[in-house]
Length: 136
Image (cartoon, rainbow, N blue to C red; front, side):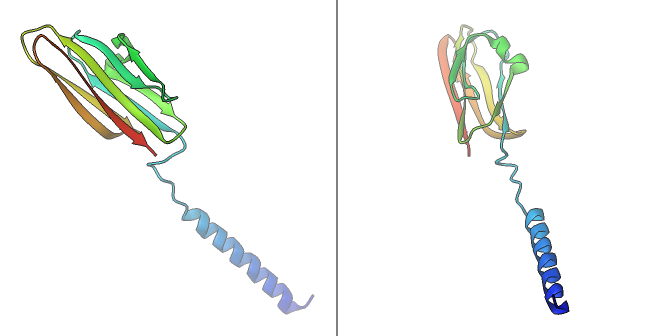
């Protein structure tokens, strides 16, 4: 092999290595679309008037429960591995008091609030609401 040919191969290898390093370092790691995401459902509940809570689990199956203890401190976290995923959170209450009650609902993804909602339950009335957010 000639010296020029060896130099050309050396330059081609260096050039390829540099392009590979640049491409790898410029790769976009999107925090909005990691392979898995933590979805946090949060309900601010201040009383015992909750009849049911509805949410989508990590398989997008709708779960309905009347057991508020499944939301310790008002929070339920799931890990989502398949997208698109529709996060859903709903609440049904029966306000048996003579005062209006307010409930707050929040869906967060990877620590960022994505959707919020409020249920204002009039006195002596059954009320419900839900919120959804789609992860892509």
